Image 1 (cartoon, rainbow, N blue to C red):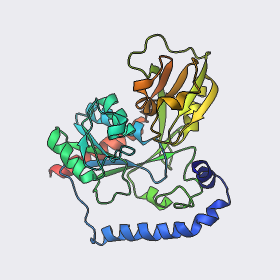
Image 2 (image 1 turned 45 degrees about the vertical axis):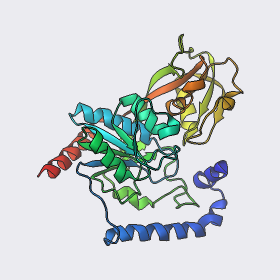
Image 3 (image 1 turned 90 degrees about the horizontal axis):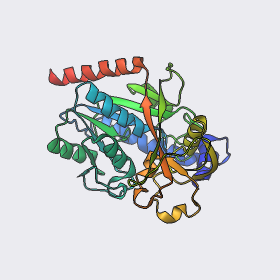
Length: 331
């Protein structure tokens, strides 16, 4: 089903016209919800600290997590104390809870577990983002909150919106769910503060370019020993993310030789049986996948560490916007 939808959303598959009437229903319902907030029938909740929201308008991965990690590290360098909130997708978490360095992906979601293990940032997850934010503010010294996803969660008031797009996929066929991949129309690009194009080569009028800088292979198992495989050594590559081909392309661009690739669904809950096809050949996966595989990973399993990189122009404009928001809050 997922493969068929990807062909419909990102190709010229005739199936989009079968789903088109449902897209009109989706547009009506989502439009009514936005109108309710605009008319004051539904109330937004403004938190006591500024909120930077990192989201998208397409279904599936667009590269939000590297942006969140970048923002945490960048804000700290500017002297701020960021915290992060998230839905905790895949964990089944309803009540808000703090994410600890020891929290597993099953408990809090793969992306939150990865963010905290990478940065140590104060973070809370739960289905109610407002409650998660309040828990975070009660539990840690936080003067600015980053919301991981939730662009369409209009109940949470936000001060800065970053919309992340996969530059290679764009808006797909440009249609709303379920005929297309869009949660909101292309008009939303004109309403946010920053559009980030993941994989774009340079900044443009369409958005700021984000490049993923490769940091090399790291062991999945915490007790793993030995050196990473050489680039000339054949590898098996595994990805359970929104756009797995982007990961495979990155490996090949770095000069790695892939003998086999295996694709799993985004947020797939891995277990050892999923890797029965792997013998002793080195295996490489994404960092998000690795978070869920540490307990049973082989010594020949590795993940590719990547970091988001932006232009000086983007950082300058973002800093100006953050300072303006902070100044306004303190007036």
